[in-house]
Image (cartoon, rainbow, N blue to C red; front, top):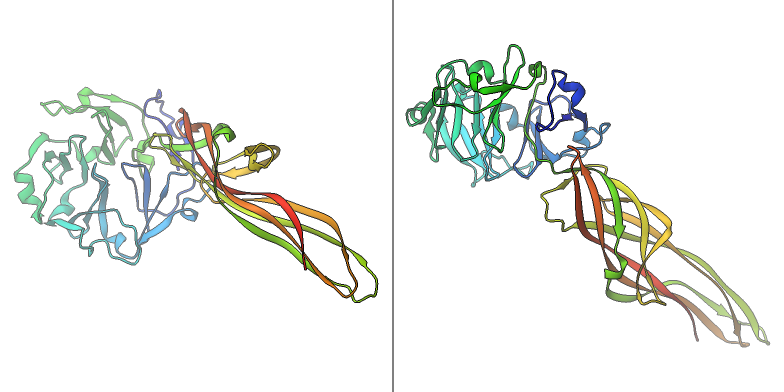
Length: 397
């Protein structure tokens, strides 16, 4: 899978220009939702997941299956601006509904999935929405039509009678890829020579005369789609903000205990020795205000937050750099040890108990990230974890 920015100067060698962000094999449909979620059909199954950012990653290893069996029966899959999925079947039906999220529920049989086209829609070689919400269709008659999308189970021929023809010929050839960019320009790829065009459709329908040729050989790419520049490619700079950290609820956690019984007639001194490693789970949330979605495998190194009993505040252990993950739960370790002596009187029993205070801890952070298109963005968020402190060893009779 490759990604390139349409805002950069384009050359004929699109494969060399585009950045490899992951592996995507044996698919029959590839599309991206308005909020940047990638959907792919493999076999008869539908998968969803984030845009990857690791060139060696098999996308299906991180994707989630959200539909089974029925998806090989669809001819065209595309999204409405409201985020709902639209699809035409090979037998001519047209559906619109919420994005699938459960592989065990048939999408076409869901109560909130509506059949908005009952027959004839397989004759459309391309279907897509304009930024203003109009539905565009490239028909088998080589025309491009636009109209308000159907809301009832309408026959395609009936719908076309309500449409406006915006182009009279030559459109089937351009339908290898066809989609509007956010600025309202129509992008298309010629099936024969692979030329990539971008431009407006004038009133006379002479699209190619009013478009810019942005490169060739794009017909060698099986699937093309627009995505938002919202996938974090890597972390440029990361900084915890411990002064703004806050403690949450606290509890006492026993980490070691030992019972000593003196059966002698004189006092006996015992040594209470232990070493305990405690594991702490944590995760990151972001409050950056940008519609960014984290790609797979985003890691960075930074110190470990802890609670300083002396300063009564959160601090960062800088000498213990940890390999953090933005997307997955993290696990860190903290070690406690003690070597204490206890004198047990004759005929008595003593119990030694070691405990620490465990507190929930939240620490804000600031980060500078680079997206897969190369944009540099400042973001903020919060680390949610815990801290252990105040080791105590007490004697109990």
